Length: 214
Image 1: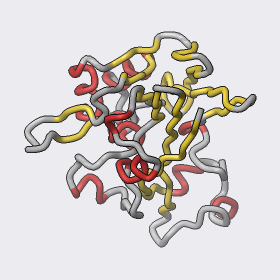
Image 2: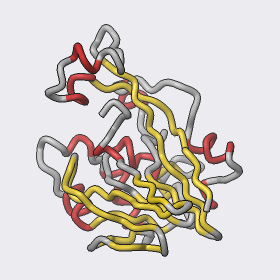
Image 3: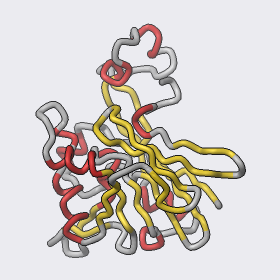
Image 4: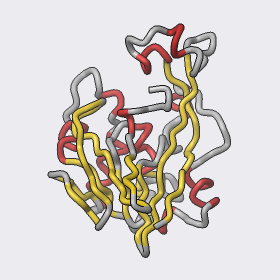
């Protein structure tokens, strides 16, 4: 088994919102905010290569949204999903499994892209199964007012329409040594992958721990 960090870019969010009740005097030493109280956050994913399987966990914000939408999040850096995969010798077509911890746009936006002539939205990973928890899927298509801005139908519905959606109803292994556990934290039914690797268990925390400072 081989594991690669996949860098899909960086964006900015309000530091106070991200650290909650923690006083700014504490978190600002580790994650300095700019003049607008915004901190930089990496949209970092994980690629697990195990034999013929190439399992990607999350895929960043993508690039299909318009400049106005992306401008709200101050994207910066040279990393993209495609560049990062290519750095390790892979393309989106190589991915066999796309595990989405949850369906917020900064984790699932790369799931779907425009076709060549921008006339239709299609899966970025045409050969992959897309794994989503049932609780998260139900929540994403029927969100409350607080969370609905994070769920974009263009990131979600084309997965189902393509026939590539695989709903995970209960915790368990999808492959030997690749366990999907679920938590109702940050959002309903967030998947937390547990991967057996070199005698240890690697846990991809998703937005339960959005930074090392958390």
